[in-house]
Image 1 (tube, rainbow, N blue to C red):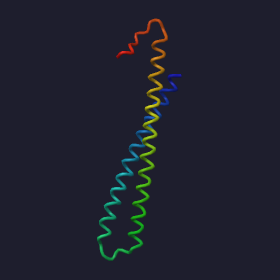
Image 2: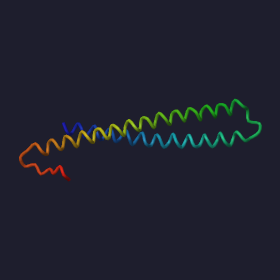
Image 3: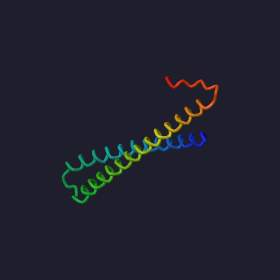
Image 4: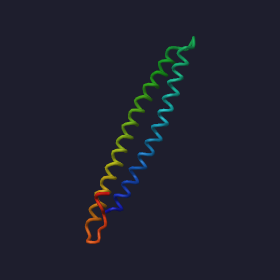
Length: 106
């Protein structure tokens, strides 16, 4: 039973880590396109449809970044939930036997 919880914990931490890297990547891409929009909008002769496309991609990345942020928060909550579950399980098992040395005051 505890092995399954440890596997769940490892999976949750792994997913959180991947989501963190993805969030950083999307944020970096969003920063780059934001800079591009600022730079391109000051240049004369840029067709309006190209600028509109850049602005559209900027909005797409902002939405994607929000989705990734939400996903990362969900993964963080999952890690926390599994940690609590493991701690409760360990407290239960450590107070189960007569030779328990678990000190709940620590």
